[in-house]
Structure formats: structure tokens, C-alpha cells
Length: 382
Image 1 (cartoon, rainbow, N blue to C red):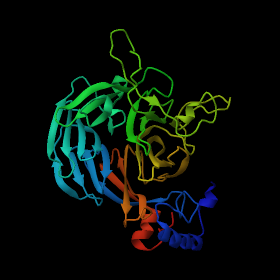
Image 2 (image 1 turned 135 degrees about the vertical axis):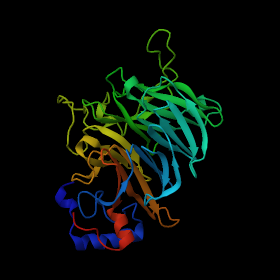
Image 3 (image 1 turned 60 degrees about the horizontal axis):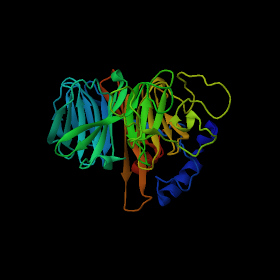
Image 4 (image 1 turned 45 degrees about the vertical axis):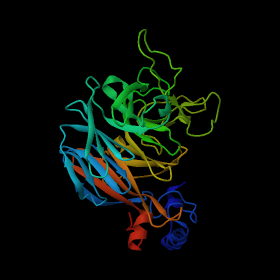
């Protein structure tokens, strides 16, 4: 959709907002316009918060968890501490699972897990030789393969060229269970430089590949493939995941761009030119990814200083942060806002939090829809 169509006239927008409020902001039923209501961006910077050497953020049920130079902290959406900070040597990765918070401390080569509601420490496990972990995610896809385990825990370990998989048991902790992907091949089943991860609305695992010649977010059916063969004589079966399509195939055999977000070979015969790109829907080092309650996919397009948003089936929707509001984001988290019991009474991704490297800052953005809901005023002009 053109930029001109996105920049709606203010009277028309205000009329549309009244209809949206009646139908439910999250669904946007009354405005067939997927992007921001007042501008191309759709999100406004509304808070900058100090955090020494910030690394990762994650949100669940209106609570934000952050890791930085001082350790792990639990905060409200105004970034006020709720529960104090847990000191850690060098926390580099963070993820959430139901009532648990997982943190990787690279200094001690140790995985920690805490009770989400108050950061009570529940356990830890040394995993020497694992390598520097840059991101983590949890998924229950295929967990029935390991009796007694509650979830799989995935760790991006780019220096080792793998994404490791552990079956997590409530009482005994992590148990190695193969890998999700390695960097040893060229297809969409391989991840060359593993980065951030998230689970999408269909329980598939989204993985950032920051290879400068790829710049992809790859979609996986994370269920361990029991027929996967060993990569070398004497090695255990990798039990890798399978690449999963975002949408129905447009051609047979399927093209690479059906499995990934970003610049990849399509169905046509035109030669594919790898490398970073600032086109809409393309990336320059996508380093983190998350998903809101409606299934939209938010990608930290680090090299392009912006965030890009995609529909659940992988089509580009809109972007924000092209100005100096989000330079080089390396971690992203979103928080939905619910106002009632109705299915439609939700502002999806009402808040977006970004970790900005080199600034000791976390920045909070508010969606245009939520801004209007809160203030009953149109957002200021871009």
C-alpha cells in the first residue's frame, strides 16, 4: 500500500477511530488499513529508561523482565522495579515459560531459572563448553518425546554454529536433546549466525539468522525430527527441526522465501542477490524477533535502525523507527493491553520495548491506537 494511502486525512481518521473503539482496537474491523493510523510509523517514542549495558527484554502479562550489567530485574510497564534485581556476572540471554524466567550467565557458563512472580531462584545448571549464548526461547512442540519434561529450551550459540535444544525437567533441570539447526548447509533448515528466537501463533519457532548474506528470520517446525541422520560417524542424531512455510506454496518445489522473512530467492527465475537491504520486508542484520497476541511478527531490523512488522503468514505490514528513535535495536518485546472480557477489546502490541546498544537505554513505544485510547487525543504529527 502506498505511503499516500497510509497518511490518512485527520477527519477521516478520527471518524474511523470511533468505529474502531466500538468494534475493538486490536481487530481494526472498521478500518481496512493495516498500518499506522496517522503515519507510516504507527508507533511513537514515549519513554526512555536507564539500564546499564542492556542486553535483552521480555514481557508477559504486563510484567517486563530485563537483563543488563547489574543482572536480572523485574519491572512494570513504566520500567519501575518490582521485585529487585538478581546480581549476575554476565547475563546474555533471557526467555520466559509460563511461571519461569530463564537466564544464561555467560561468565559462569550457567543456566539459571527463577519464579516469574518474584524472581525466587529455583535452580541452576552449569553447561561448560556450551559457548556464548546470545538468545533463548522455549517451545513445547514435540516435548512428548521426553517423558517427564515440561518444555524444550533452545539456545542460540553462534560461535559453535548451532542452536542447542534441552528438554527441561522441573526438578532435574535441562537435559541435552539434540539441536534445532546447525550452520553447515545452505538451505532454510540451516541457521548460519543464530540470533533471537520466538514462538509464533502456530507454535512454530522463528529464528533470526544474522549472516550478512542472508539477513533472514527462518520459520521452523521445532518438533525434533527422529529420522534426522547423524552429521558425522559416531555422533548422536541431531534431531533437528524442519523448515516450515509461512504460507501456502506459490510454486513447486517451494522457494526459499516461503520459509523465511527477508530477502530470499522467490519462485521466479530472476537471480537472487544476497546481502543486506533497506527495502520494505528486507533486513540488515535481524537480531531479534517477537510476536504479539494477534500473531503479528515484530523484527528488530538492527542494521536499518528500525522495527518491521509482518502478518502471521509472513507478509510485510509496516515499519517504524526510521528516524533516530530506534538506532540499532538488538532486543524487542511487546505487551498487549486488554480493557474488558470481550475478544475484540484488546490493543495488540500497545507497547513495544527496544534495547538500544551503546546508550545504556531501553526505549518504550506506544501504538497510535493505544495512544488514542489512553489520551482520547490523536497522536502528534510525525
